[in-house]
Image 1: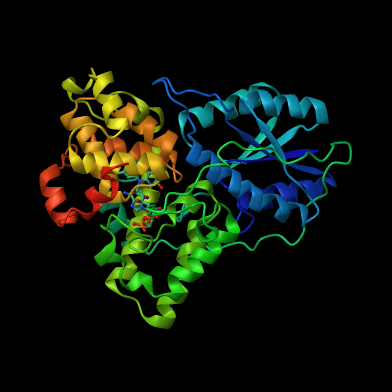
Image 2: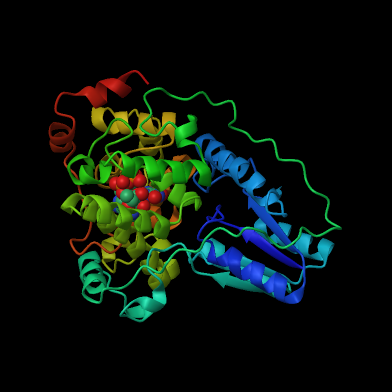
Length: 432
Ligand SMILES: Cc1cc2nc3c(=O)[nH]c(=O)nc-3n(C[C@H](O)[C@H](O)[C@H](O)COP(=O)(O)OP(=O)(O)OC[C@H]3O[C@@H](n4cnc5c(N)ncnc54)[C@H](O)[C@@H]3O)c2cc1C
């Protein structure tokens, strides 16, 4: 019998890892047990707050609610557990007699350590790298030579005309659920009682923004049908409302949407309605997402050190002001734009790219706090938390990543004048 463990790939369309598990099970005439292991409810970060906050829990719960019937409808099901993935999966393998596990590869330290521990525990583990737009084997560089500077990466990709591989259809049928494993009742999830905030730029409690593949694909269709890619470049630095940016990230981060599916749909849109500089910009941004993934493959744990990739002596020691950090998290720094952003994040689990840059820069460069604490707070709060994009962007802004200029310091007053000239955004979140 085989186990398939979902990670950040909670979908059936364009799912190479699930296809591999399916093929292997069929070849062996074996059953396949799909599993998902979630963080335990009380898990804390080293910084003293919940690792997975209520917004993320709720979005993930909705994602699983969507996935469950899709698996059942294809002759399978979903076993859901909470706890340490290694402990849970080894216990499950022992209880069911499974000797093989298929999972997507995640090149981040904790996820890699989990795979090592599962192998050490006796399981044969097959990992499949699949969360990128571009396949690593199609790049014109070896993994250790992928350019550190984004522009060089993008230009190299475009010069070599690196293809986006075609997407895989969702399977019509899955290998059978193992007869000796009882079908579990769905888990009761925390966060179900959260009331949607009407000010949210990504109202995930509403059906059109709900977690899961069904809403993801519907959102993608709607976004294109409304012609929004033609306006994306002009509006992408907006702060309020659903339409200023694509809002693909929560579904991409949970894996409910495959980036290749998004680009395939974009290419069809461009073939029908014409390409524009603006529609190109969505590709450009998805390349940023890919670049951070390839940087994790190249640099691994180094991106998680206090000094990140920096070799500047002053970056070896990181200062941290716990009281200032607390004020930042709760939106009480006294800097109106930063406070508005931090309140929006806490109230909704989402924040625009522009505001992420502003609040991250403020924490690192003005409040002299440890950038990794900021990254951990985002991990706890963001419904679109993605280890690669989060760690990569934080390190970039803190000057510990791949920024050729050695970090980004945003002038908050200038940002407010440019992006919130009439103060509407600050007023929206002032009383929160
Ligand atoms: C400090 C900081 C932390 C971040 N943490 C995350 C995170 O945990 N998860 C996450 O998905 N994004 C993260 N981002 C990147 C970016 O802010 C979000 O991807 C974007 O705001 C999501 O909204 P959207 O889908 O409407 O983006 P759009 O502007 O519509 O962009 C389309 C897609 O391109 C990708 N993209 C856009 N900007 C970036 C970027 N700067 N880096 C990587 N990919 C990008 C995303 O997949 C996004 O969905 C972070 C940025 C900063 C500055």
